[in-house]
Image (cartoon, rainbow, N blue to C red; front, top):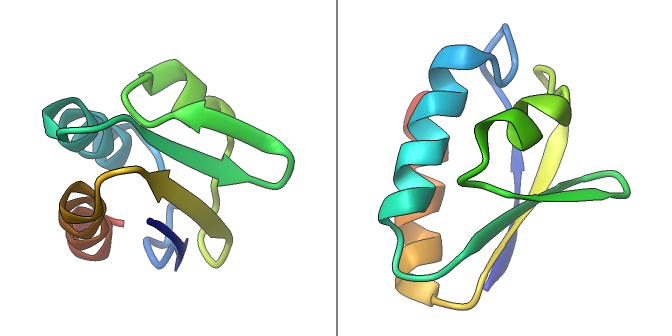
Length: 81
């Protein structure tokens, strides 16, 4: 499953929400990847995620082979970012 998400946190994806995202990705049943522009990173790698420099209003693409894991991850994004 692949979906797009537009970041609504005024600070973008900074340390606190990045930590929540990484924890959720590590708990997922399948690997989760986040893409911004031409760069794709594993969601469980904090520094790689922070390196994307995702700001408020920017859209990311999330991909995961497990639909249930993707839905759970989408909920985490909606609640925290």
